[in-house]
Amino acid sequence: MWFHRRPTFFLVFPFVPLSCFPPVQQTPPPADAPADVVALSGAAVMIGAGDIADCGSVGDEATAAIVDSVLKADSAAQVEDVVFTLGDHAYPSGTQRNFEVCWGGSWGDSTKRIMKGIRPAVGNHEYNSEGAAPYFRYFGERAGDPKKGYYAYDIGEWRAIVLNSEMLGNPRFTLADRKAQEEWLRADLKDHAKKCTVAYFHRPLFSSGGHGGNADMHDLFHILYEGGVDLALAGHEHHYERFASMTPAGVVDTLKGIVQIIVGTGGATLRGLRTPLAPNSVARIQGHWGVLKLTLGGAEYRHAFIDTTGRVWDRGGGKCH
Image 1 (cartoon, one colour):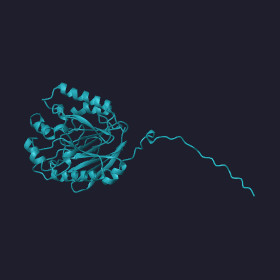
Image 2 (image 1 turned 90 degrees about the horizontal axis):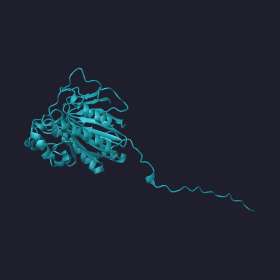
Image 3 (image 1 turned 60 degrees about the vertical axis):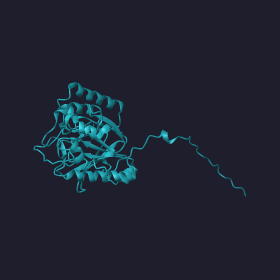
Image 4 (image 1 turned 30 degrees about the vertical axis):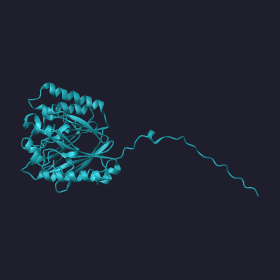
């Protein structure tokens, strides 16, 4: 007996190298997720605050402990991270002694990892010392050119832009100085365009705090807005506050607007809020020292405020433009 075997056909596909496929954009995990989970997602981490070291406060030691613990866990899990600061590092006047004793006793403690990965922004208390010289001397090249105080860097798939908001109200800076920062900002946004960008500085454009919003920041904020920046971080006010995605005019814009978050809770004396609140303020925390942690993905981010008791507030996130 004969059996007729059906012919077998094989489909042959041409070889395509993996490099030809676009990378998968993974959603970053919640900002308070364990470091090993962040590592698996491929996200990077930014953590920090502003208005930090006061020798008369225990808040800076407590926030430093949080930051250091996150950095240690990130290191073990091989997560890329950076510590951002939002100005007013050492009270009351940013002197060399203030940095050595007050800052050095908390965030600047050599047994911690903070100084190894810090990327600071300058504040008004630094300029209480002539030219903010102790600040630039203490942080060295990580603080940028002492004559400018603004710079930029990459973190994960994000661009981070650090601005000197003190140029706007300090008579030692000329109109030419301010214009130079604006021109540099436009050029950096054009030459280093990323899907996602975060900018940070000391003085906020919008605020429900005692100082109120800083209208002088409008021009810089407008450049950030036109350049497609997604997130802006500020200090100066000693509370936490997150605003809706807005234009520089304070109009809600869910397509192109910038989310501004104030995190002036690094350890200095805490302050309350004024009433009425600033328009489009969507989350506020007062009376708690703490830090902001961000997990940065390829096309979106997650944020969370972690106070010094370990409580996590205001979990959320957003997509990049």
